[in-house]
Length: 308
Image 1 (cartoon, one colour):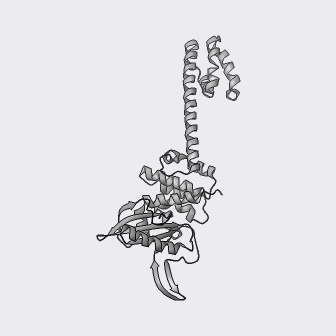
Image 2 (spheres, one colour):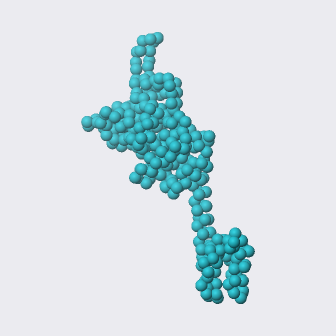
Image 3 (cartoon, helix red, strand yellow):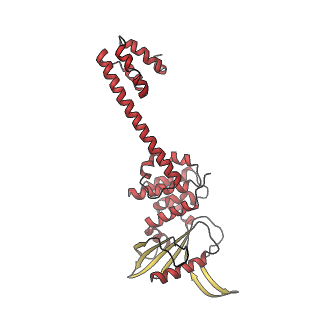
């Protein structure tokens, strides 16, 4: 199995959090009628090199809050303390109460902490609580189409992903009506898929969606390389096809001028030749006495097309 970098995985999650903030609101707080007001981009805290994942402004009954999402692939022992610090600093810097949510991606059987505690032995003196979402628990709902915008995560949440899971991902993503969002979701799916599938297999699996992915705002290095390579191949192929078609048309006109309408078999043989081969036939077309002599020259170039 091929692996992709953690940074690329983080970028995928940030794309999803930016584009589908309302979906995360409904998933995390389904019974709370919060309304998305806006997004705060690249929020940096007053600590060296500390940047939170995503912060959105939401409102409820006229009161505004900050909706802070942190993604964790796996739990880290220091996260509860960091969540506490992030919440305090966001409240101080932006002057709004904070709803902190941590979204875990990788499956874990043991309980996940949902608070930061200050305690002496068994006595809890202070406690900061935050919301925890175990995204793998929503696998069936995502696969069923309730959260199609989270489809790129299915292979990560599946435990043992296979081609069937990948096919379901693609099916759900292609339902997205917004072309830009569809391009981003496809790029996300390929990026996360590269953690579990061979990249060449992925490239073939998503080959029909290549043109859409060219418009994605999120493209990893290897995907950019494949898209560029595919674009260049497309140009070369188009050029070669155009050249072959033009050369065939010119040669046919010469032959028809000299020998009249060409037999269908002759046209079929000529159509199988490359532009270079066709170009080499202009001299015989202009000098040979009849079409039969010309056919003999063509037969030598394409023996597989000779009559049995």
